[in-house]
Image (tube, one colour):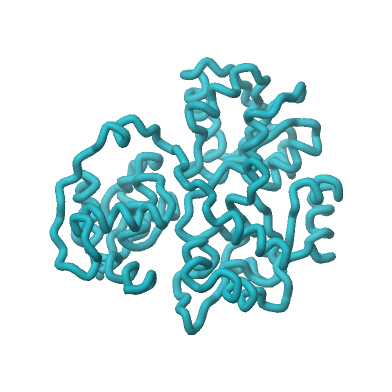
Length: 341
């Protein structure tokens, strides 16, 4: 059984049954409160679709099948979630066997794992690095970044790239093969071996997430013409990461800014900060990363809207638990809702 076939087999397991493996109660179909630990859902915004094998949360925006549910609940990458589900649901046997549900027994390691820890080791960094060699920044992308106040020096430092008009898929597939490109999160959910489709549209600006010199994640910003499907595109079935996370452990006399998103992070750097960017609330600091902030002058520059204010308050409380003193900066302009504006 190949990668796609085994994935399809696992995704046929009802969501209710998968949730049971995780100790979560869900209906066979219909609405309930979102079960994910990082989403405080006061109203029922989570829906199990009529098929019983698909779900969506209209509150936090996440959706998917059985493997995706495990990935989001446990904070795993797609491959780890797939392996976990196969081990739990099939007693470690091949996914072609008859389903026999095991009771979930939490190991000591699972009990000690902290919420929000990213366990994706960046095993696809070679794929992402090769993709970037095929995607030089175009004039349209450069002009977009310059219009947002990002200088050429910063653009070069952070290795910003851009999807070319000519498809790069043939070269990616030739070098790595369909299953590897799929596992790296670069293909949309309707892709097949016969009709693979890359998730980043032509002309979109690509921001690599660098950790220790390796490219561990990619996020793209669609420019005019492709924004109707969403401005920001993320890797499929991979947890979001913190942008410029190496800044946490770097020694710097600059004040340290926690921003919301890539563009605000680059804006903060232009303003003289050492900065990182939060990608929503599915990517969080690990305890070790928070401890590393104790000696820094931390300023929280999340968006100045209702969601950003709530997130800033939660973040301050979390930092304070580890002895990190932080300042929530006031709205710098009555017409702005984020730092770049």
